[in-house]
Length: 400
Image (cartoon, rainbow, N blue to C red; front, top):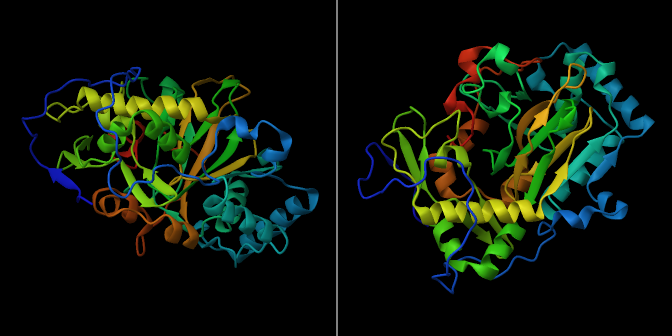
């Protein structure tokens, strides 16, 4: 497997083609009929699903846990227990947040992130009944049974991120990065094994979270365009680092990890730029073939995605190694505003079953996010509104 290469100067052999995020329909003849070494001919796995598989109630039970009255009381008691210890948020754990009955349910669901469909939804809490601090403690308490290791999401030490439209009052539309706006986002991954979202408020219109199986996307592309697999797995994808030094890195975006697993790891923004993060001048652009390959992934993901509009109080967790995610744009109202809180997590099962490829360990923020021993941790209970923070291009994606 080729190693990640970081360049300090652009390779002049690259010819700029597309420097925007427009989506083009894949077309053109396949130029390869075989797959690169190590890639499966087809993935047969519980993670290889399409969104319509979950249309009936029976299949929805595979990933939804509706908390009963006893579960909610147990969470409330655990929250009071933790608050009585006078410990910082980072000390929320299975030991400091005991859930004698609910804990076993959560651990069983967490296994499904690796051996099942790869995502789970927990429903039944009403955050309006609790303080901001209590909501965060319960979210961290639940997540401790899903992924006991938490990732730092920026260089300042913030361990969570509030995803909400801060509006033009906080910064102009052309400056606010995706977490702080209401625009749709294409399919991508983050720098974590497991992603968690807590819904503190839902949009008036739209704002659905979308999940798509990487295995299904892979199988669809293999059937018709095996040449695209060659391109996605080539160490030739130029990621803009938006002002960091060196200015860009080069690595694959598709990795084989076993007979029934592959990993897609990328975000379109550092690859092609967008309205709030234009491609840095002088950074090599993607070729037309690469843009076509990205779009093939996007279209396959759209075709097979599961879209869920999270209800206030919902907690959604998914295996970032096994699927892509996106979101639809939305409209808020004064009484209904979309507000999600994101965690980056990992557990022993995800680390063993979905080992991080060498290129990702060497060239991204992945390992650094989870290696924060000795560093201060920040747990903002409300969105950060400073303009310099919400407009920072380097922090908008874990891959930048």
